[in-house]
Image 1 (tube, rainbow, N blue to C red):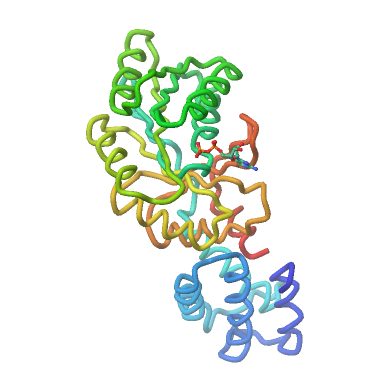
Image 2: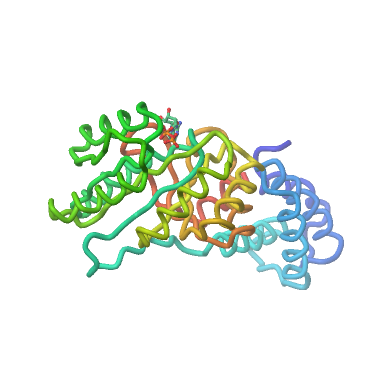
Length: 295
Ligand code: GDP
């Protein structure tokens, strides 16, 4: 374990300092440390292995700029590669300006931070001049509906809900309410379960087919580590979502889930949630996450 990959590599490669190129010897040593760094940041083993091989190929023969050491050079190559893999730049929410209301559907396991995210997104959109409405389609847990209502009050955004346990009815009702109330974005919070199950997936799929959301976002808890990737894959196989929201990044998760998810499902991570409060939401910046992963 080590805290800073750059310092650690500096130390390991010290005896090789002065070499003008990245060669088999120093890259071999560096890659071992980089793989360890990736694994300790919870990057999926297969993803880490492939990455290290790719980076080795790319780095070999690169001449080292005079002002930096081979260690710094290698860390820069790794950093750039991770940033690139995670999409290079932030990928914004893709809401068609002329479609009113635009629809955002949010799916994920129970406890992932879905409901909180819906409110955070509503607040963000409102700040950007939108006029959103929240829809409680997580109809099976009265606590979830109450939670959304409380959050809606906090941010002064209306929440549409119904008494019956009928997610489709709630979602379609929410859409009607949006039209009647001249709302321009509908955010639909759907039901999650503690684990992936058929009923949840079938319901989410039916909602997707019926609503044709402009953005279907999958919310996942970054603290789940390796499990986050399996969950993302299962949701994507079934729902073919548009983007990912990584939550609980205020915790000590190093963020490897971001890299693995991006590699495995090939969908952009759009937002990161960094706390329980309604303002604790950031857009996702691949370069910042690369630095966090490398430590
Ligand atoms: P849902 O079941 O997926 O709708 O999840 P909730 O939105 O109810 O969130 C589950 C718990 O995680 C709640 O206690 C939230 O306050 C908390 N939570 C959500 N997002 C974050 C986050 O980014 N950081 C932290 N620390 N807690 C979060």
